[in-house]
Each structure stands twice: as C-alpha cells, then as structure tokens.
Image 1 (tube, rainbow, N blue to C red):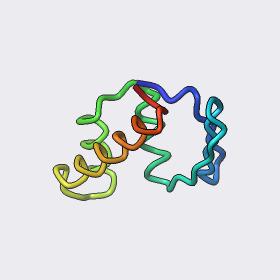
Image 2: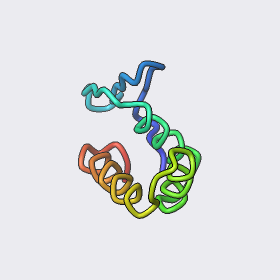
Image 3: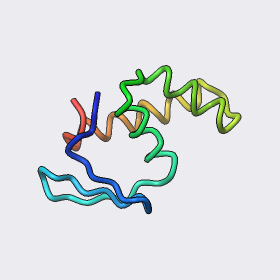
Length: 78
C-alpha cells in the first residue's frame, strides 16, 4: 500500500494531489505513512512503533488500524 497521491512537507502538512484537500499530520502519522510507503503491513508497523515508543503493541495496533481506516475513507490508500 502506498500513498503516492499525498505530498507531505517536513512540518507534516499533507496535500492530496488528486482531490486538492490538505491535512495536518503529526510526527507519528507521518512515520506511519512512510512505513506504509515502504510496503510494511499494519502488524509490522504496529510492532515497530510499539518498540520505538515503548508502548503496548495491541494498543498501538488499534491506533494504526484507525489511522489506516481514515486514509482509506479519504481515498488516500486502497
């Protein structure tokens, strides 16, 4: 899964090149998108983020799935 239609600047401001919508994405959201663009599956993203931020993987996974669902709703990923 890739978000090729989304351009993100270093400050987390994202612009959807197809719809013209813009979004503000926090640091973790930007990291999650980078990992998606690398082709990492959601369970791997959850594991990596839980290790980096020393949080429970199950709790992180809920947030990762929620964020991914929002990306799908906005048509940013399929």
